[in-house]
Image (cartoon, rainbow, N blue to C red):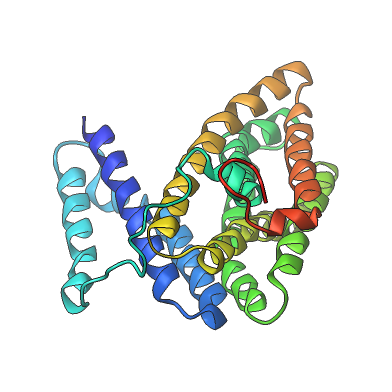
Length: 287
């Protein structure tokens, strides 16, 4: 029940805050704001488990600590004014039909979540199967997570300076290149850490730029609907990534994992290169 309610309220929190930030941020600085947001979010996910080192995992203390921390997170809202969407008109699309209106953005959410969850779940397994020790597996996740956090602000800055389509395509190509390279440098530690840092961080930039484009393309209730759709397609990617990656490793042990990630990255690169995907479509599929 706690897990269900936490997920339910967390989803609402993400949709509302991301809609709010995207709408009130000027287009000229939206990329940097989204980059900073994703950096802080990534760091919080990395640092959050450290609380357990203080509270332990037994009894009520870790739960109470989490509730108190979340309560403090709400204090800044007391100093802000009310937020009203710029448009309250009925949206022309729903959460599921969003994939027809903006297929590129929907796929961006799906693919980045697919990579994130498949990677964090299975990279340690892959590293052990190719002969690395457990400490090396932990370092792989550390450098990947560091890239995912630290590169988002520079990517957002770049998205405010040049054509956002070019930034998105560049991040997608980096994700594809990294998917090809990292399996071949598994036994070259320094090169492996560097590859994981840039591969993970630049591929995560696909999501940062996708959020920036959503704020550019949608307003008001339609933006809120788009952010809700982001959550749904992220969830689908997070669910299928470890599942498909695990099946891939079983079919081709252990190299099925990099192959699955390569195919996912290649599919998104193809989509990102289609000019028509940067124009919104109607919910019936017509331009």
